Image (cartoon, rainbow, N blue to C red; front, top):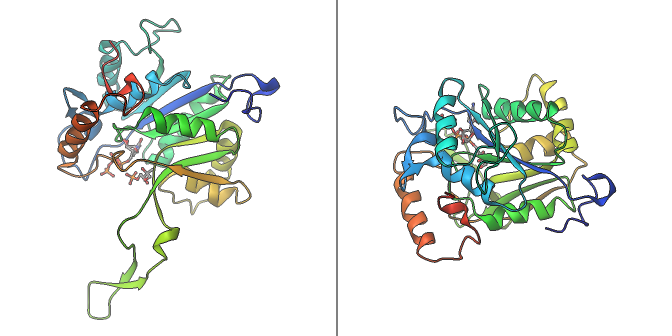
Length: 278
Ligand SMILES: Nc1ccn([C@@H]2O[C@H](COP(=O)(O)OP(=O)(O)OP(=O)(O)O)[C@@H](O)[C@H]2O)c(=O)n1
Ligand SMILES: C[C@](O)(CO)[C@H](O)COP(=O)(O)O
């Protein structure tokens, strides 16, 4: 990693300490399955294990925390232990063992992001934080690396892909249903994904302001920085079409096909994150 360039977050030009927070506090209403979607099996292991393993495998990530639906954290404990990804009180038990805490998420994704930041208050040392949806199991080593690298230049970054469809804004139609209200120029539109990365002081300041706002509505963390710290550049970097968010019925099957295609082309992901680390 370009450690020397990342002098913004790490005093004295030292290599910044990067914490990844895997957000898994949702219950998967749209998926409609009995299990929260992050626990559904995908190519033989739970969706969330793929996401956690990817960050554990990144040489640029120092530790990983997981924010899980409160009453299901025992399941993540077991997943992490069985995969050899936990640090068990500080001492790594296996290569890539980086999960240092499994904590309760919040009532909304935004509340879960905030819970991750609060957890870091009690764990001094983090310079950069990567916030990632547990429901995006196909995140690649390359995307993680691009995020960390960008934080040498800016305080906030998110991966995104262009839209190949025309995207419209809608409103109520005069004859019922929805009608097109606006057609924003497609070349200016991107579909944001995760990971989204931040210098810790930047995302903390943004969330402090956001939480004081009774009108806070956010669907991602870059949006929180944009809205509450408008002078802060939020860089957009290349994401990957394959980095889907498992959201609706059928998405696990799509993810499984994408994973199989990726594993059939060794080297595509640039690291062992897509495979078992044991
Ligand atoms: N209270 C919440 C809600 C969501 N998430 C996480 O944010 C990511 C993206 O959210 P989404 O796809 O909306 O997940 P769910 O909230 O579980 O799904 P749904 O909206 O269909 O209920 C997921 O990894 C989800 O677990 C979270 O950490 N805490
Ligand atoms: C953060 C995100 O994945 C960016 O696309 C997305 O906004 C999460 O939305 P969700 O409704 O919580 O799935």
